[in-house]
Amino acid sequence: MATTTARPAALGHPQVAEAALTRDDRIALLRYMHLMRATEERALTLYRQGKVPGSYYDGRGQEAISVGASFALGPMDRACILHRDLGAHLVRGVRPGRVLAQFMGRAGGVTEGREGNMHFGDRELGCVGMVSMLPDMMLVACGLALAFQMRREPRVAMTWFGEGSTANGVWHEAMNTAGVRKLPVVFVLENNQFAYSTPNDHEFAVDPVERAAGYGFPGVKVDGNDVEAVFEAAAEACERARMGGGPTLIEAVTMRMHGHGAHDDMRYVPKELFEVWAERDPIERYEHKLSVDEVESVRVSVREELERETEWALEQPMPDPATAGDGVFADEVTPLGDGNAPWSRWRNG
Image (tube, rainbow, N blue to C red; front, top):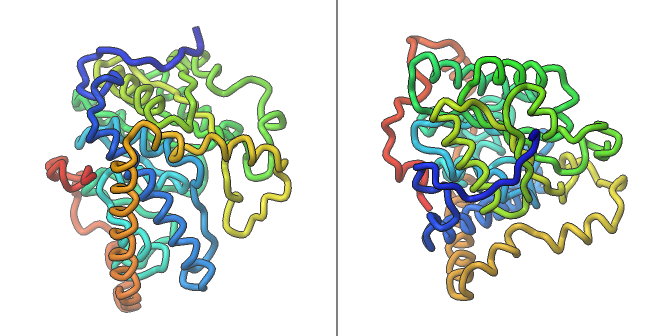
């Protein structure tokens, strides 16, 4: 069948089945979602204060997708992360302060004041800097996966993209490449209902997850506002990839609760859609899985961390113009991360 339902499965990976998620794991999942939302809210405030140049894009309402999917990755895996997937950076170990400094173009940012505010990745943590032309990162992920396959390494490449990307020819090229070569890659499609202002019923005649079968690999549709459902689908897909079973397309159904960017007032979205999806907020829903004390502890911890990180980010200087050419060209050939960074460096929840 083209589409399957995500389900717990004992596939030999320590985090595949729902039962394998410990209490600490669930607290970590909630904390990363809260941290993503709080960091983006702070960044939006800084944008409105004129401290963030350019426009600003966030993933409010979609926190469960980047957090849940990236939580299934191991230290040696690689993540090609896009602009609505800040949670994946945080799970990998990127500090909120470095993210805020990045948005403001400060020297303490992930790219030290270079690149656009949304274009960043820390190779030591296995995060690849994004490409704006969506979904070009799918081909980057395919390249990583091909390298893993050629070296016979049990590693996975993962990337995210919106459903609007499925109308782009590059999307089909990546799907075909992954299918033909049976690459160890996981594609996470964030169906947030609108490709900018175009609704689903004007985007495609066939649900994109059904197309996976046409390229020779499974398509899995999950509730994108259920962090454990996303995690379970991603963990199963990652294990399948590591075992030589090839790629998986995961469609996570969600809703974009803010505009395409900070400049977009979303007047084209029916009010009732917001009301329906507000009742399905991924963070509020997941809080019910934990105790009142655990939830409050997470909220306090995130609030305190964000204040410290914001203060640090605002103290960072602007980059020295004389260093603008530094790092533009490689002085020597180095791998994308040595894969030996301690687990605590990137999963610090």
